[in-house]
Length: 396
Image (cartoon, rainbow, N blue to C red; front, side, top):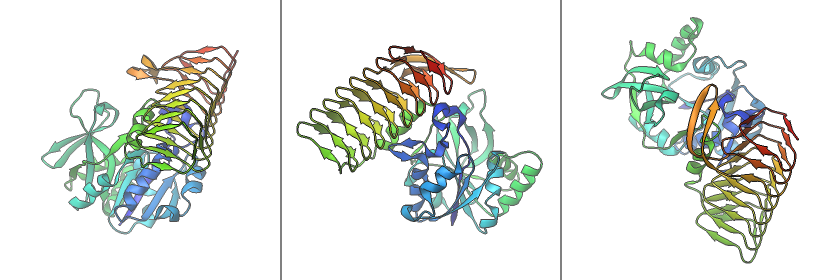
């Protein structure tokens, strides 16, 4: 059986982190989200993968190549315009000749999620799960084990069961997609609603992992989930006087200097320099070639590749895009905050700040909780940032 992974989208609501990176390549647990999908399939013996790519497709294709390093055989097809999931699936139709799986490439899943789908053996079928925010997804209305209706992003709460976007389908479904796209309906759930009038659609409630990042602050939760199964590894150098507790992974060429305290799960990538007396608390990922200055404190955060933080920095419940650089005494605390995004207000119990790639911060900068700073911003020493900052902004 082949699997089609939909990975053409940008992920605009993740704002500064998809400026030059497709959503599927955002790192959580120091691995691109898409890697978790590929691994879950391979662990279930599904190695013939078709990736539908589009936005920044070179980033995906360069990382995964032909799939050999991941135990898979990967082919690529291109969706030149993001016109919906059914349209995306149709780009792969010439490579499909039997039953197949469809999965989104931008959710973290595990092998159990795919296993639950395969064990039922029903085609067509859909994987469902529970959500605390069903209005952000497609809600599934059931009759027993069968789908009666799929309602996209309902205003009223009608169920907490949602569509994960993971399906087992037959080749005939592609003809329905083609007909539907031709009539202007380009999403798979809409085609499935038409299908349910002809054929029963089995709902499979997974016990596996399925977690999505819709907004920048969701990356904190997704990262914590990805680190939950972290394996201890010490490939770098740990100086005398360092305390490591819980699962901590330290990549090759990295140095954790004397007096540092690291409480896992924490992932530290390759080529990092963790300064003396740095404290890192759980559910933190630190990417490759990251420098953290002496006496800094990091907790429950994502620090992407090539970042550099000066001495006495403090980052809590935040995300720093690749290439962010700051002087000493950066303050990015967390607390309850309300964020307005796309005309909606989001009240969060605890949130830090979100800094886009290649942003430069002088010394003593304070970024207030809930702030979203665009890519390639330049902020002078001693400034305080609040709210949103557009890409390329200069703050003096």
